[in-house]
Length: 368
Image 1 (cartoon, helix red, strand yellow):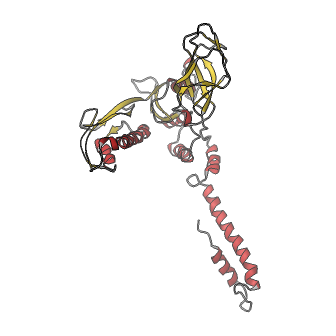
Image 2: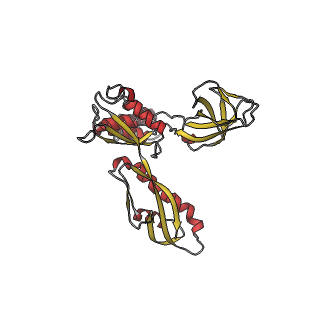
């Protein structure tokens, strides 16, 4: 929208004043009209801003959320990481009690015991490792790579060691504005309805932890709808996430009954995307003063960035192709590298086409 400026409004208003009246700056007439012109120009500005808020492509986050809500689309909330951890007592004379709800710290984050693999409360630990599920108290991706020693917030008699082994359910930050905007646009343009492919994509990607999905519909040789998913980091999902998606879409005990999101009569199988390790071999020529050791970290970063961009686009491609030219172009932009030759992917001097349900993960990078 084109709106009038203060100067344009003031000029128009002064032009309507009879010629015999003084309208010079500082005159009574000028001083009376100028504040009105300023307020009117502010109204034009606010009107233009309000019009932008009416359209999805220009709406700010609060108004975008309201527009999305009209279609049943809500922003994904930040989630909390679930980790697998163990506790030990190496003193046979002690029997350690780990109550559900006990709090532990690991680095700068705090975790609470949700349940143990034995599913009892409290858990008695006698010498061996006993495994637990702990939930991070802080929501967001900050906990996704946090592992190490667990320190009890309150003293637990006899406990000699506790540690996080792995993250079983990765966390997500609150959905960013542009992701929410794109989900709305995808919903409007793809017309999801009644269990079509667009419908499965929309509802599967709305599940916390899912970043991408491919949908394979029923065919004459395939009785189930098959979903392949990647996690919110566009990586291989955990079994916990796969089971969550399956239970949300089509619970096993009620498969085909329409209890989940899937329509009545649809039997759904959920699989995780799998990883293909990408080993890269290079023959580099360096500028004077540069060595493999001085550029190795940057080379690993640009290759990982390229592979991540491929993973982000996995759901939109029939099969990903890792291209030697893309790797070489990025490496040649690194200061200190003059030339590159003999590039290989998994020992082969050609592009690598992945399985349709595979994503590339960086392996070793060597300079021959």
